[in-house]
Length: 104
Image 1 (tube, one colour):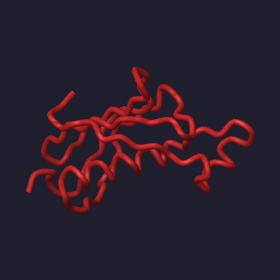
Image 2 (cartoon, one colour):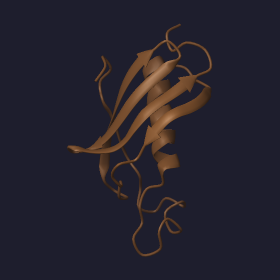
Image 3 (tube, one colour):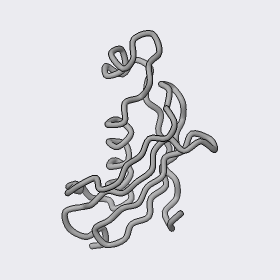
Image 4 (cartoon, one colour):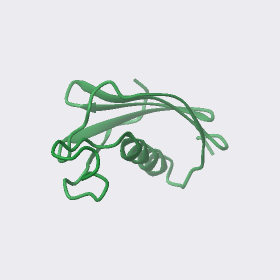
């Protein structure tokens, strides 16, 4: 993808969002994955950002608690394209619109 190195994250199996998603077979909710993408954008830009929209987000494969996932970012103007992978599997991909440009 773009020119920013992958950032890795793992959702702790004890995270409070997991017991209800889904009982007996926990899967990391998409909102937590997108939240980690926002964290990665902020770490890359070294500043906080505001999200203006999620024009395109897909979750083709589940992420299980405790699995490591990598985030790749491609920052272009106010749009950030991202791919989240667990090994070779794509967990999430899409775009976020920032309020204001990614580059300062």
